[in-house]
Length: 373
Ligand SMILES: Cc1ncc(COP(=O)(O)O)c(C=O)c1O
Image (spheres, rainbow, N blue to C red):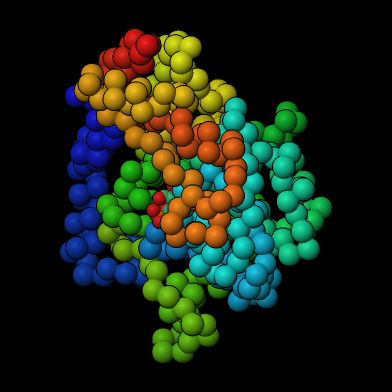
């Protein structure tokens, strides 16, 4: 049996250190808004290359709070538009509609599975305030063209970095250094859901930004809207990261690059080994620009491929079976057509890939994929 994800094995890799960190918090009796959050925020900001990091309760809140903060700062208001890829996890879209903003869905490129940067500018209107890119599957979605469109139209660039901790954008000019996703735009949201490349012991998330005011407003909104005890500047929410999670994340952050390298080595075995005309792989990126949160393949007979792999004891998942515009929660969009998005959702299958997976298991998956007829 090859499970899709093995959180027991992943946690065991640094189990003693994680347990020691969590025990330290338990013994301290200090569970929220303490030293562990401060330390992790400072280390994570440094790692990403942003001036500020604010720990929050989950990735959806991180996205929601960025937009809510821009509204409180007078940069966005009800009915303004946010350009976003049509193929993303629903949380990206929920963060926009939750703020009474309007998502403008843009089709992805079938080769990269990322938002098609050639289609962004034609989606810009007088109401557009931001472009929200998603580094889906661990692949860098940023391009110089996206940065350029945002600058020329005065749009905020927000990154959904839930799936891409440690990923880099490599500029085309050789004399420019690569930069981490999560530091490329005006603000970024990160999820530390347990299954992510950097996963907590429950839900957790963060906002990174260079903008001190934005960081302050996000932090305040996440604390009931309060900067000073019992004084409420905004009608805020409660969205804070537990000290136990911050402590565990600080341990796991030290191993993130090593874990991502392992994912990249295993992904190379998939790229080099999979040869089946019925199965296509997204364009191979340089390792720096893909931390392989997931390993998606496309197959028109996806459900048959999944059943074939299940019979061989290989667990796979679909990311994601139903696109946002076809979900019951957005009935007004259900009749719209986004053919490339729909094609991806109908044909995507994610193969097992994580840092505790063995090469032998990956070779077994390759063999089984290649045997699919
Ligand atoms: C692309 C994307 N955005 C946002 C989220 C939301 O993160 P969370 O589950 O921490 O709320 C997730 C993960 O679940 C995600 O994959």
